[in-house]
Length: 272
Image (cartoon, rainbow, N blue to C red; front, top):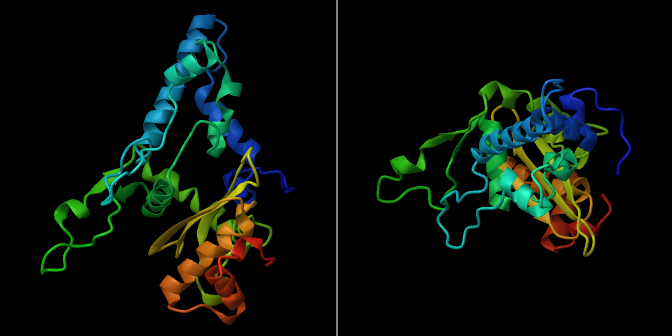
């Protein structure tokens, strides 16, 4: 839990990482609209259909499937289906309470680090991605193979992605959950989102994913640090260092201590 003002819109919800806001968004997507003529069976069928539609759209982001990268043992992650909940709850009559954690990327949903980065690339590109590769080109030309430049488009309208960026930029500003990832002092506007993954067996895991520059992206970074707690205190600064080094070729003096801590493998435990 972290105190913050009431999130009145998407921008504020992203800036402050307001879980209840996203609970209500998923509820509006999945829950059937009130209908006095609907039978209980109708309500169940509509809830199943709405979740299936949501899953189909989210799956188009390269989730619950193999992206097709150049290394063995890639994992597909997992997006639960209505049938999964039917089996897990031993009834078709499960309610929103069974799935609300999906709205904040927890519960049964499972993404790899590469898939997380790819989702951010989709936002940066406003709705499409190119399959990530470790090899840029093959042969003497130095040019990527045609299949290395194929665009995969999601089922979500491109205008929807633009609506996310102001809140992801605001998260880097004063009071935002990723304030420590700000690179405004070196003229880089970062867009991103923190995450804190609950862990029943120890300290929570810290995550951050973002891209920069926000309006003309050149790099996407996703960071996952086990048992490091709040994402804004460790994963976000780590991502900022990577972005700054890539875009500027050096680290500003004010973040040199972070670079030292990161090289020592001790960034997560330091006060910033």
